[in-house]
Structure formats: structure tokens, C-alpha cells
Length: 381
Image (cartoon, rainbow, N blue to C red; front, side):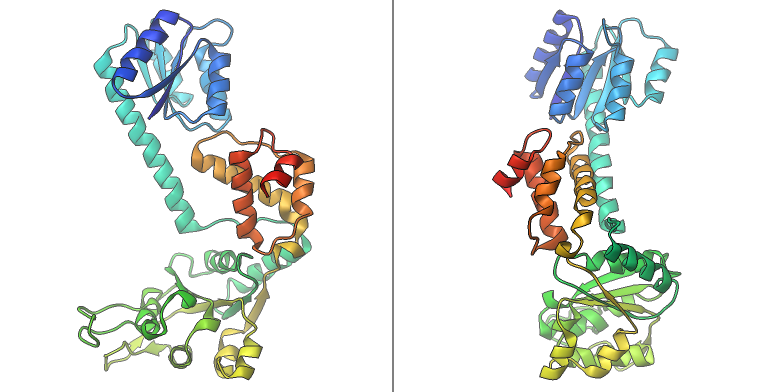
């Protein structure tokens, strides 16, 4: 727990610092609004106590600037001249709480606890939203504009889509975007990584199983197809699916019903299937490892996601997006990349695609300067 105290009265800020340190908090102080803003821009504080009446820059101005810079610390305003109107004004401007002097230790400790709970809740909420809604498709290059146009045309239909492209290129984002723009967007969106599930378990994962159908089947289990009923099922890395599972998937697509492992009754399902692969499925068909009839069932619409090396014009936009995302997650102010640093990133090769770029941006934000320079890129790439 890290706390910043901004107060022009040395005796108050130092005594409050000592009291909170005795309670086990990591506390720093600033003697005026300008110094407080600089400290908040460089460090991440859970709670900031800010006096209202200060020379040069008043506490309400500090509060507004903290909000403008996207610093999500819980800000607690303190004043010896407080009234209801002042308190209400501070809360409207984004303060978490308002405390009058002389300061009461119990009130301060309760406020810190409540503020910390709120900050943690907001952080968890941001993380949850990212998991639920996914990330954005960022880019204005010709290949990405083409894909966005395809999505707009395809999403409102129930046509099955096969998305191809290298690992880390953004196939999952295309699939999720199709679901979000479809008439099924209010229904479930279920992802299955076919490469991550052992071949002996994939049928149970996709179609479910009945209690007792095998040794570890201690209760009935709904498969991914049934979970996605009324929505979209995203079969990622479908090229890694076993031939036996492929045959059952083909049946579900043809008949819109399935039979759980160990079951004897069919279950009807209404699912839109979007599939993705980094493999050349025509080559897999030639080798006998992928069914040609399944290929034609899942590839009504083909979307090829370009590699990052094929869309380097989008790198500055992607960097801006990742910087804002990473800084928001860590509660730190947004940092800049010099134009030369962006040019240096565009000159690189990206075998790991978008995923690799995000990792590099995060590394540069941790290890690079402010702003990030071309020298930082060469040193930490």
C-alpha cells in the first residue's frame, strides 16, 4: 500500500507520514501541488491525500489534473476550512472522500481501507471487462480495412467463417468481432483451443458426457457446443483436431444435433461456428489429416489475417493502443514514444506478430526512458 501526502504545512504532512508509517504504510510527501503532480506522474499511489488550501496550485486544481492525466489513485481531500459545498464540489470533481482538519486517525484509517477496496474493485473490473469483451481491432492499413469491411458484411449472417493466419496475428479478435456484430451478440461466445486439449478428451469437451461414461466422469458435463447454444462457438486451431472429433463436428454442422459421450439421446443445438487455424488445411487434406468435407462446411467465408510484417503502417497506432492499455492496467500515466522510436519498431521484423509487439511495448515502458527513444528500442528489443 503506497500513499502520497500533498500539503504545504510541513508539520501536518510529516506528522501524518509518521503516523501512517507506524501503521505499516509506504508513505511519501510533497510540499505543494506541483510537486505532488510530478510524484503522481512518476509513481503509482493507491491513495493520495491532498490539502485544498495551498499556495500556487490549490488542491482542487491538483484533483482535476490528476483526473485529466488518467491517474486512478483514490484522492482524499483534506481542509481546515471545509463546508458542505466544498466537500460536494470535490466529490463531483472525482475525489473519493473529504476530511476536515484536525485529522482523526480512526477516520483516516477507515478512509484508506475503503479507498483501497474501491481501487482494487476498479482494477478487477477493468481486467474482467478485457476478458469478457476482448481487445479492439486496431489499424488503418489497407489489409485491416479490408478485414473490417468483411466482418461488417459477414457478421449479420449465420455463415460459417474460417480465419487463417500466423500465431499472434489476431485471429481471435476477428472471431470475437464477428460475434459482437452479429444477431447472436446477446448469446454466449465460447472459445475452444483444439490444440490445447488432449485428443482423448476433445470429444468430451466439445459434445459433453454422461455420468459414468468413463472413469473420471463423476457427473454429467455439458460440452462446448451445448454451452454455445444460441451463440457462437470459436474453434481455434481446428487443424489440430483429431479425425474422430472432426467426424462428429461434421455431423453437428450437418444435423444441428449432437450425442454426448456415453449418451443415447440426441441434443439439438443452434450454434454458429467460427474456426481458425495457422495451418494450410489444403495441405493437411492432401496428407489425410483433415477431412475435406469438414473444410467445405466451415469455410463458407474465408478471412486471412495479415501478419504484422504485412501491415507495419499500423505499428504507431498499435503502440499507442498498447501504451494506453498497459498504463491503465498498472495505474501509471501514459508515456510517449518518440517518432524515431516508432520508426525503429517499424524497421524490425515481427515473427511473433501483434503478441510480440505488445510484449516489446511493455518491456520498453518498464526499462526505457520517458519518452521512449530509438536508443531504448535498440537496447531492449
